[in-house]
Length: 447
Image (cartoon, rainbow, N blue to C red; front, side, top):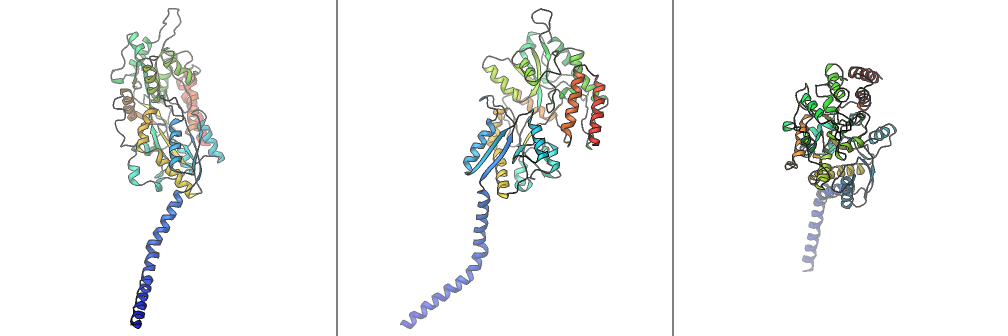
């Protein structure tokens, strides 16, 4: 009996040993390997540290916050990712581009920054290409125009978060008071536009001093409020081969259309061309001494909020006047996007990507309504179906030319805007300004 029992125990132990010998390689190859890979993946996700981000202000009219949209997202992201801290450094629209340029030259750059569709960053390859971190399905959810703005050499260098464009705002009450009909369906020719601006430029208190004007704006690098007029005859800034091409008849006639508003028709304030953005905007929305003001989508919310409080006026959004090009047009760096600058730590790189994916979630795309901006994802539809003015802007996106993608565009832009300003204030003719700009820019491009 004992011998049988001993034999049975030995048999069981032998079977266990055999099963272990067979099972161990299987466990080591498949189960243990999966555990190790899973642990590695988790270790990547568990990166802890500080991510720095620079960002421009985005006005929320309801709260008055300028950086509220991004700070709210930062707080939520930090809560979902304990141990990760996002350090926001606010930059403004006037000095921000310069700060990014300096950072590019000195290497003092944040982890993440708004790059828009700036060709320089993509060509210098200081950014992380993001294709490996986004599936085809994820990328297919973005609008073609939005992805194109951040693509170069078959790589994606930034993630587009929001879109905008320019159009013209008109004070409907000033139009009515002076018996001026708004443009039908928001469209008018340049000639119709001029005739209406003449009627809206007048002396309101009979003191023989003009105190109301048809239109005003400002001329400044990185801003394209008046370029819908300048490009209305079909002038081209950079051709399809990347060559500077804003000269000749179409360019000169487009600039002359803007210059004539001040020099010939005198439907602008005397300081048109030297007035700054804040003063020009105040004349329209606060003083109500200007009937037309071209600007971006953000102004819809501002004017709506003001009107609800009983402090504003009824307004409408219309297209830029149509010139020889036969369709309304505008110029804008209309895609806002974030890029990730080169990272040495793979864990940190992954966390930066995770943050960008977090920022473009569908629910946050819908929150862009509070900023008066448009989503970059194609599955967010009819967000402004009940807002006729925002719908007009949405339609205008189809007529928007994106700021040229040229490595020296910022320098080209500064030269152009400076020369056009000189023509507007009467120091040069339109032709002289265009020719001088061409000479300076061609010299710049030879360097």
